[in-house]
Image (cartoon, rainbow, N blue to C red; front, side, top):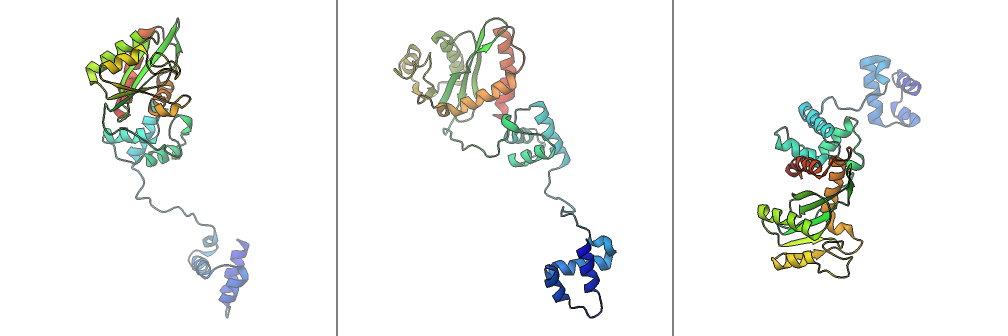
Length: 275
């Protein structure tokens, strides 16, 4: 402020060489003219640093869109900008871009973190139509109050639609076969199913043919296996598992398989419309 005041005092003196003062104080002609104009209009107060924030933001999202985006995130803490944007569009609240929703969340002090809203989106690869490829896997095993839960997941590669989310007591061929038959009756047969190399659809990569894979081939479904130690081959199902863990498996252990299946069914109806 003292240098600004000195510049203005000297520049407004009778017979002042303003160009020389620009060089002396190391300021540009435009900046100097602006300081002199502010001083003439506002006095010393005009020399204070001015905010560069625009007086209006016509492109900023409407308040109701911001409030809805924050509300959806509070209800679903694991959702990122892309999924929330789809929900807002479906509900007729607005059509913000995913990046806009991410900006709204950050502006409201919501940390996206590892559960949703990465800085850079993944490059997405998908088959051309539904039922071209299903991805299938078990989400490990989870403790019940008594016993273990083995969540079986089947995901459509094109749409990311959850074909099946089953609370299973084991990982045997008959268990998987029963769940797949129910899925085939409801959604039809896929051209191909991709799995990893674990049982019951593989034996660690030594032999692709198990009782389950032979049965699938016999009914006209091709079977492929991921490369050993390359979970990214089933990347969509792995990403589904992350959402499942964050949104449906964070609470206390389920009492039994029936309670787990009820919870899975409720969450699947939330997941599928915005997958």
